[in-house]
Image 1 (tube, rainbow, N blue to C red):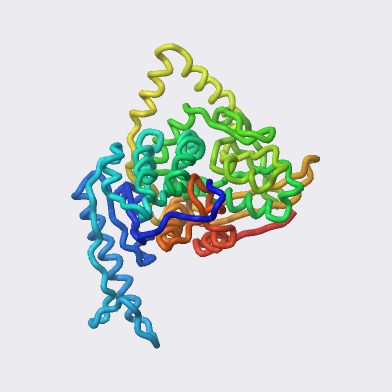
Image 2: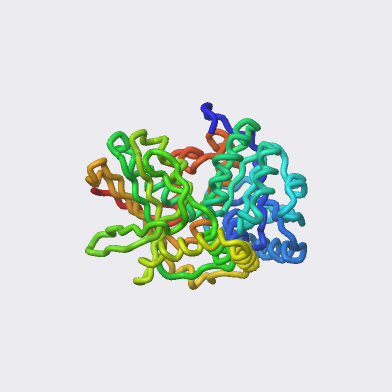
Length: 406
């Protein structure tokens, strides 16, 4: 990140890469609901055309409902017939694995939103294109290896070029950044340890999430430990969180963006523990299981076979429907502690389904970036990019409640 709070000059144009995938489609609907006119980019023209038609129908229905509501003032952008003047959405067929074809989609100052996981396999070309175009880039990844590459390798390049990279700008890992920043807001000078846990309930997972999760287990992760970033495998430890009312839950450690983004706000922060909640007694076996899996990667022949198996799993193949998402909730807890272990501040976020929250955050972030409201260049955390107050307002707008205490 650069020292000056500058940002790329915005064109107001948003390009959505991977628009016809499960997450991409949710993001497209959120963008259109906000009045945006995103360029829909993907591999299949037929699927892009179908999505554009669906979005046009959705926008038309929303406009009809709006016209039925009484209003005292005329709206800008309304045609003489009373219908909002909306041009048809632009579509573009592109090879997501070729930075040149992605680069051809974007101009300096555009906003590029990527939902093309698994990102370790498919995410790199979009970031490269965004840097070259001096654009603002957001994505939906949760993959530690990709996140680390963005912050350590691509972020400095983006800073020099004048681009802004906002990786993992969804349920993975924005809520933990928000909860952690709130926990450190008044306690940062005394905080030595920060524990962040993600505990979704209900719902299901998409095909893309399953494909990414399998690869994540086989790839190195990291943690902020002892005042510096250290390499470690996923599920190296099991962490227990007290959710209150006598409820204690366990989670396995994983890398997020929090180890990169939160320590600068609390100079005395020695440890940042990020964990994913796992139900059932088998969670205690997770450290041994991932140790065996990562050990197997070093066996000649076996390691290559495991990676080929992981990469053979399909990408997007649908996900939870609207009813399943409505029955799902996300819960995130951040606990700031002193060096002696005393709890300084607890912050709990309770919000909507992880996929709906991801779509909301990506659309919100893209809209803010398109309005020229991104702060800084290089690899940015969500609080760095937009400010704590704005991010808190966005979470509440999405239906998230925030509870703080000790």
